[in-house]
Length: 81
Image (cartoon, rainbow, N blue to C red; front, side, top):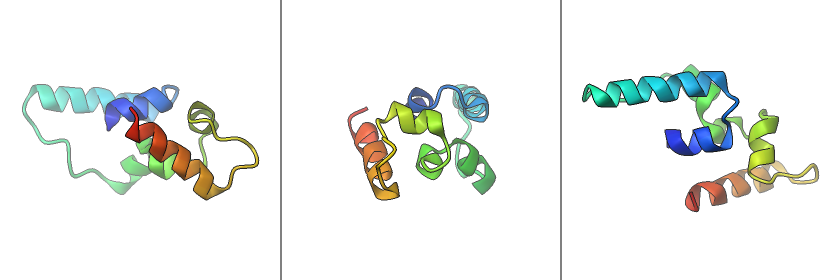
């Protein structure tokens, strides 16, 4: 999930920090879940599709797409990642 998120929103500094933290925890055999809701809102593309222009661009959302269209494009990108 972190790899996908980083691929569609590489300019998100919070996300990049979280990816590094996840890698570090995994290298020590520590769990990476659960997470806090604030972390999810700042890093989870499915919670950010309506606010991140970078993310929307990277999954092909256009100006006339509805919120449902944008979410569907993000889901398709994840499904084919």
